[in-house]
Image 1 (tube, rainbow, N blue to C red):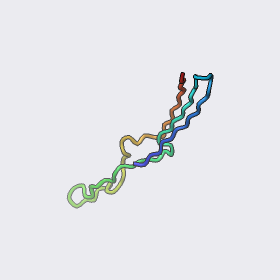
Image 2 (spheres, rainbow, N blue to C red):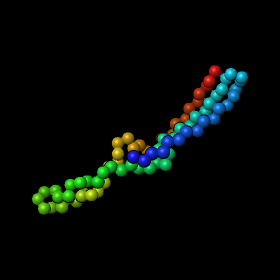
Image 3 (tube, rainbow, N blue to C red):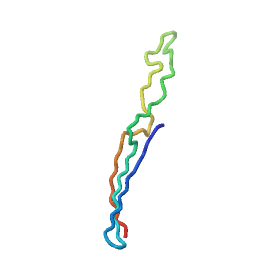
Image 4 (cartoon, rainbow, N blue to C red):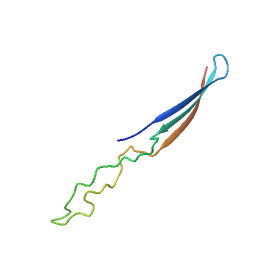
Length: 76
């Protein structure tokens, strides 16, 4: 599985002991697909060759598309 996650933070000082933090988190930043294994069944019945032999028909579970999350955090 190939995945790149990243995050950016910006801290803004409001008062002496009060800070506001802006956060942006990106999951699967490059939006790279994670493909499943190819179909291993070569012969479907008897000597007939399966039409889906060697084809990849799904993606790996948990391989979601790009997700972006924003948040504000008040620290005091």
